[in-house]
Length: 477
Figure: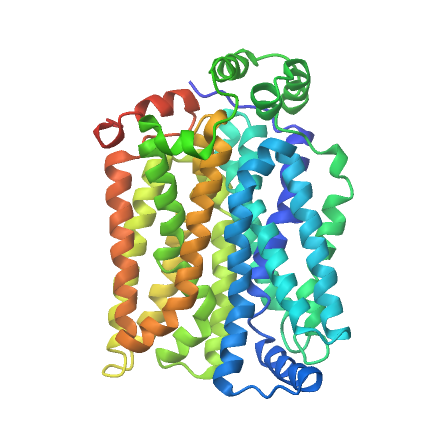
C-alpha cells in the first residue's frame, strides 16, 4: 500500500524555487518572441543596413527571423545532449545552477544587443538561453522526482510543466504592446525573466540535493541519509527508500554511458516509451498551436483582433488546466490518464481538421475549430503535457536515468524544431489536413500506451524496470 509522505518545507521550497527560477523562464523565453516580432524584424533590417550597408529582401529577412526563432530550439537540442553529463557531474541541484548561469548570461545579451546594435549578439543570446532551457527540461523534472517520496512523484514531477505553462502566459502578457512589447522596449521584454531568477536563485544554497544522486552516483551514503531525513521530516519510514537505493547502488554501474543504455535490451521498451512521449508531446499538435495560434485562428476565418484574443485565451486555458496536473498525477493512475489524454487529443485534432477544412462552406464551423482547440488543450494537460518530462524518472533506474532523460529530451527538442519549421510549409501544401497527421500520432501513442506502458504511480522503479525488461514481449497488465 502506498504510504503518504510529509510535505516538508524543504520539499516544497526546493520544488517551488526551482520551478519558478528555471521552468518559468524556460516557457517565457519560448513565447516572448511572438508579439514583438514586427518591431524586432524592423530593428534587424535597420541595424544590418547601418552597420554593414546590407539591404535585406523580404525573403532574406524572413530567413533571418526564422533563424532567430529556431536557434533557441537548436540550443535546446544541444543543451539536452549535455544535460545527462552535467546532472551526473555537478549533481541535480548543480545542473539547476549551471542552467541559471546560462540564462543570466543570455539576459545580459538581450539587454545589450540593442545598445550595441548587434544582431549577432541577439542570435548568440537566443542560442545560449536555448542551451540553458535544454538543461532545465532534462534536469529539473529529474531533480523533482528524486527529492520526492514515492507518493509525491507525480505531483512534483508535473511541477515543471506547470512552470513552463506559467512562463508562456507571463510572456504573452509582458509582450503586449502597451507593456514591454513596444518598439522601444522589446529588448527589455526578452530579459524580464531575470526577475523570477533573482527571487528564486538567491536562496539557492538552501535547496535540497538529490539523495539518490548522493547515494548511488557519488557513494556518499551518510550525506544522502541526512538529506533524506531532512526531506521526509525525520528518520521514520525510510526503510523502503533506503532499501531501494541500496539495491540500485549494488549494481555494477553507478552511472551508465549512452552506448550502455542503447545496447542494453532490457532498456529497449523504456527508451521507446520515453522517446515516444517526448516526441508525441510535440507531434500531436501542441507546438504548432503555440507557435502559430494566431495564424491558425485567422486561417479558420477569425479576424486579426479576434485571433489575437483567442490566442491569449488559449494560453490561459492551457495554464488553468496545467495547474490541475499535480493533483491529477497524485490521485489517478498514469496509464488511465495517458489513455484518455492521447485518445481525446487524437479525436479533437481530427475534429479541428474537418472544421477548419470545411469552415468556408459552413460558417458556423468556425466555432467548432475554437471549441476543438480549447478542448484539445484541456485533454493535452491531462497527461501529454505533464507526464513526458518526468515519466523517464519512473521508467529508468538512477544509473541510466540521466543519459536516458538526456536522450529523450533531445528527441523532444528535435521534434519541436521540426514542427516549428515544417508546419507553415506543410500547411501551405496540404492546408488543414496537416492536423490529420497530428491526430494519427495521437492514436499511435494511444496504442503504445495501451499495450506497453506499465502503471508507475506508487511503484518502485526497480519493479517497473522488470515489467518492461523484455522489449515488445513485455507483459505490463
